[in-house]
Image (tube, rainbow, N blue to C red; front, side):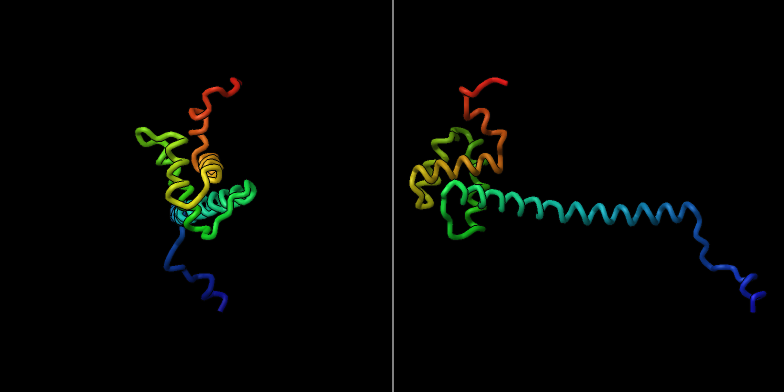
Length: 129
């Protein structure tokens, strides 16, 4: 029996090149899966951070999903032609039943969470670094 095992040749011989290709294929598949899952996880983390910041600022909300979507709509409103902090704050207050003060805080938290690069142009009298 041992003589038979010694003389047996495997029908599929795995070479170094095939092993490398298999490894690259598996690694590529894992990287694609990780990239696919990373965007929703990051979006969910940003939404949670936004909701926590609103709660800490004293702004109440009843529907987390719609509040997060409303917060994400602030940045596109700011970059539209004629978009300003005051115009966005007015839209938030008028269309969503918030007081003007609560809408201002909501807008600041949304900008700080979703588009912090927009803060610098809104604060022209900031201290220079």
